[in-house]
Image (cartoon, rainbow, N blue to C red; front, side, top):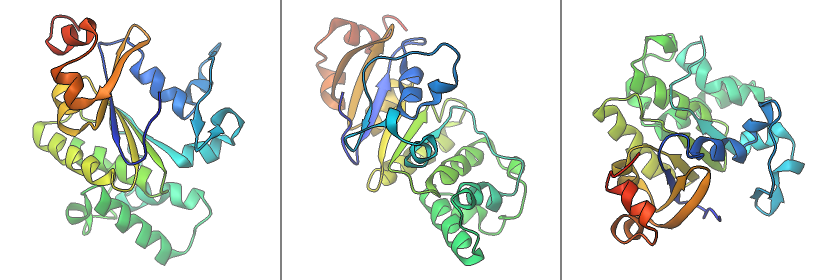
Length: 225
């Protein structure tokens, strides 16, 4: 599989088909699992990620999880957390980074007067966009989204999708979603996973209208999953 620059690649499939495990391979989160093993290679700009420093990988490949996970800090400090970890302490630079990330996550207008409030006071949708901003603040090359809208209402979902469509102008995005309609709305290409196997990968419109594998067609039509 090759992921193209500045695209949204969606991964769909029933539960336990390997979608999240696939994401965790890409920034080596599976390394934290006892007895984990893998074969093959993951290349980032022709470099095998197994040979790269783990902090370098996590900076270049950010991840947003299904449930919002704000830190027990203010809105500002949540977004600035990763930036500070890179060694930047200058207040002006931190403020600029926080503002830029919140704007990219479509959250600045809602938060510009609430930067010093606890992140736990935000709604679920705002918390998820805050987590996106925290990832964006360190300027990754690739962003992994693991069902980021699974617990959100339709309005919050629309805002996250709008942010993703804008973000692909700057970043490469891989989105795992159990919502096939969401994949149809935002995906440039879509991959169908089943029981740990990549069954099919194609342009989203083609995969949804004329899939080459009957299992893909059955899943999209709701015959299983």
